[in-house]
Image (cartoon, rainbow, N blue to C red):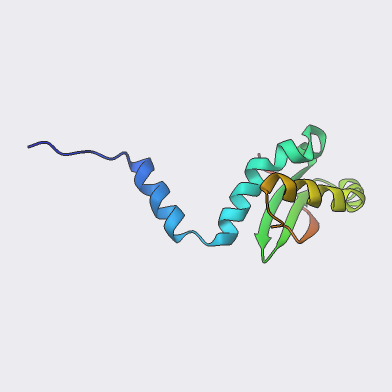
Length: 101
C-alpha cells in the first residue's frame, strides 16, 4: 500500500496561514524587511517588537536611539510601507527594551 507523505513543515505552514491573524502576517512581513529598510546600524539598535491596528512598536537599545528614531520616523515608515507594497504601518512608537536577534 503506497501512501503519499507530507512534510510536517508544509502542514504547519498551511495551518498557520489559515488561522494566523492578519496582524501576525503583517508583523512577519515587517520582520523580514526590517534590516534592509532600516539599515545595518539602525537594525542593530532597533527591532520591531509588536504590531497592532497599524501601529508598529519598535524596541530600541537606548534613549539615544529612541531620540534619533523620532527624527527618522516619517522616512522609516514611508520606506517600510513602500517595501511592504501597502500602507500597513500608520504609526510608529518606540520603547526601550532588550533586543533579541
